[in-house]
Length: 470
Ligand code: AMP
Ligand code: ZN
View: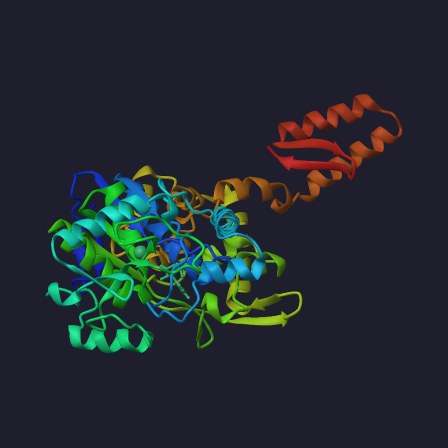
């Protein structure tokens, strides 16, 4: 089946044509580990997981690379702003490496709780400084750089395609860039950006380089690490849509000027998770994490289910209300609904006896139908809607390889609780209890065998006898 994906570069859905038949190289911008990931970041990572699962479900051998940004970087090239990693280091009284390690582990625990597939490679920026320096040197040799004010800059005026992803002309991008930069002294053009910072004695993490002791610019790590693991041209690059105008525009500029050919064929961008009208951002404080959800009594997979209900290119609003700011707990009506739908789904999947798709032909037709929704630019909400309408435990389980809701595992676990014990069976259990009380073990064993013949298994637990469907 052909897969169509919306490419931000062309603003259209394009047929996915792998560079190497049957294989996909995918790079996704990962977390900056100076704090916990908020559930907005996790929405983007969750979409990327759905993409990987879908590609693999369709038989494509997919290599997924996600970077870990553990070098502190400035949000803009503004020299007056403190590096976030340094700021966290001072806030928590730990060195930046300890901060990065702590939040990397927290991130891995979050993605495990949301049942994300682990990326094949999770390269850390601090372990790829030499690769970044090498890309910068190639850019320098080709004349795309200049040095000014203790920094090595990329000269955007040398790359005529600079605005192709954002669909903005260089002069419009210059205005956008200027808004974020107030005191950057040495730049020739306002959209130019730093490839290497040197002569920053206060910066804690620093390395030797041809431009002096310092640290890499914000964007270069993604170019260096994606090319290292996936080659100079690869199939798909993803991130949140806040990265279109600057970060991804700059990644393209430095990569394509360095190699002389296309960097990534398809660019996919996720719309934001919002809280009411506010965007979620790490710097605004009081953001929502997986821990806040679990402390508030939510199953992290309920959040996963909520995300499945919105298309990745549409904003998703979490109607969050803080119940108690001091204990950091709260609730959201749409998350409650997602949680109860998921619970019913676990119950439904356990009831395999009323499976509607008993014919192989009808099962296959349903699979093609649901797959069609996924192959149409990952229309997961439509796929989920179709699965609900087929109401088939077998089909749900088949597609759980994509949905990642742990349907099999959870359905088995809840089966005991959710299968209602018919009255006739219950009275046999009581009769056996009475027989045991009078020490009539022959009768009690006979009843146990009778229950087994009827398809019920009896276990004596500390809470009393329990019957479970065999
Ligand atoms: P960061 O750790 O800030 O580099 O962000 C990691 C990823 O999360 C990036 O791809 C961002 O574009 C994305 N992101 C940031 N905020 C949100 C949000 N509110 N909703 C969805 N994605 C987001
Ligand atoms: Zn990136």
